[in-house]
Image 1: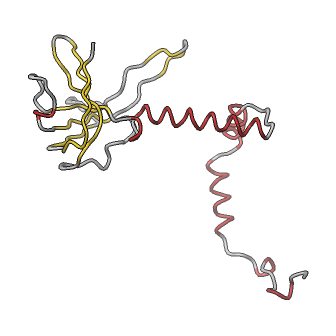
Image 2 (image 1 turned 135 degrees about the vertical axis):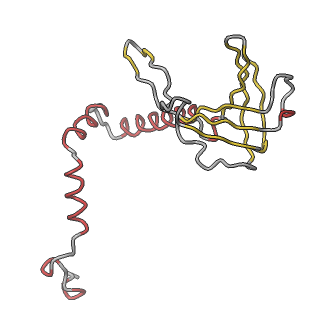
Image 3 (image 1 turned 90 degrees about the vertical axis):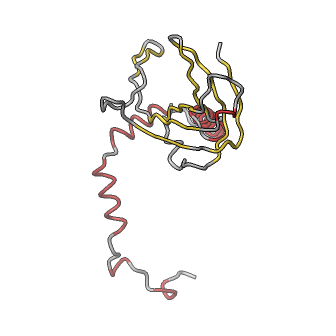
Amino acid sequence: MNTEYEINNIIIEKIYKSDKDREGKLYMSKDKVVNGVLKKGSPFIKVDIYIDPRTIDDPEFQGKLTYFDYFENTNGWVQSMPITGKIVVKESNGRKYFNFELPPKEGGKKALELDIKELDNRLKVVEERLEITTPRKEVWNTMKETTTPKDALDFSKKVLEPAKEEDLDDGEDSLPF
């Protein structure tokens, strides 16, 4: 069973971030099989956060937390910054690990999943009101097939090119009223 400690506005004493292990390989989560489909691992940044060891009541806690950042949540994190979240103590192979988790409201992975679910529910309501019957996946796949980077670039160029003299209106005199 994992032990959890809530922390609130605890100051980061030191912080180290790395996207590679000691051998220089990118950190990647393990591949998983989800609903019979192989899901490849995702890259992440391992963040070592050092806080005051007296923050939690655990004699083995030396002040080091580990956070696995899949969504660049820690981009602005620096020494002396306060953090709020949860310390989850996990035991594996006879060792204790102190992992940090952001609360969902502050943008962790769970918050992203909740946001996506909420947006999906809102889209369903809009689709029902507008009586849209074509499934979104079908529309998205059609868009992916027909929209290429070249199409987007051509459109951007057209929008940015200066107007031709004959396309400009003649001012107030050309208005029909």
